Length: 299
Image 1 (cartoon, rainbow, N blue to C red):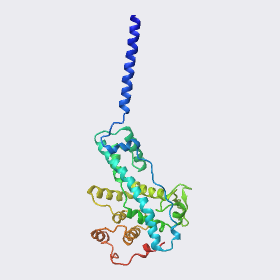
Image 2 (cartoon, rainbow, N blue to C red; image 1 turned 30 degrees about the vertical axis):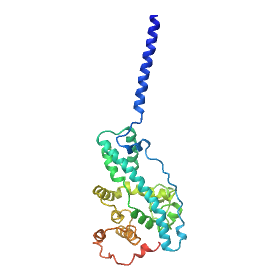
Image 3 (tube, helix red, strand yellow; image 1 turned 45 degrees about the vertical axis):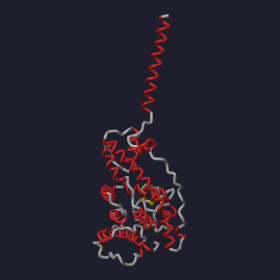
Image 4 (cartoon, rainbow, N blue to C red; image 1 turned 180 degrees about the horizontal axis):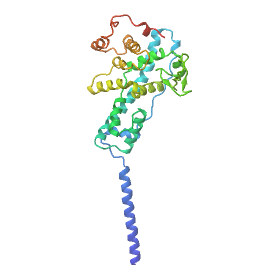
């Protein structure tokens, strides 16, 4: 009788212990509400793109220049807007992570997401607080006017060989043999190729990542962050001034981009004071001059 009682007691204690263990696992894995409701997105990182990749029009077949420009802007505006929206969603999560990190609350999944972004945006390894600070300069929107002007300039309004055959609308290079298309006029001794992309959207995303991660555009990102911190609007007309290293043409390239923005009214609300201040050192600038033929004609 005493042996049976001991057996029952032993089984009872074992069952009680198992229930405690099970409760512990439940509590550890239960999806408790986050300190910030929108931070729940982090549990699944960012959802996969639901956007369809549209096929670009045959811009070269559109003979009328005005119609070609209109078709070009209508095609690329949504792609650029959607990429900016994706970045703003990332930035919202990033700022929440920054706030949580200040209180030492980052969880394993959040640290994994932070590491993924650190790698994607070419940020050197550092403590989380430093990585977050550097990512804050990188994960941000790019004015649509700037992206549209560069796409128009680099792809000759969608008619260049690289745009038509490789979906490259921003003149991006790659440096591994066979990674893209070899330019017909590549300098002797040069090894670069013009990158190819599966779709126009992929080209847009690669351009955004290039601007937001390459060391050549650090000054642009610093200027953008300063204006964001002050609550000032971001204008492509101003930011393109930090693209000296995007093209070998330097200042001439910048003036071409600004001409595209002005002539095509991509930013109709550019303050007159900004126009004057950015062109005060350019003796050839005249707000009433005729449109630049380079930006009006298709290359």
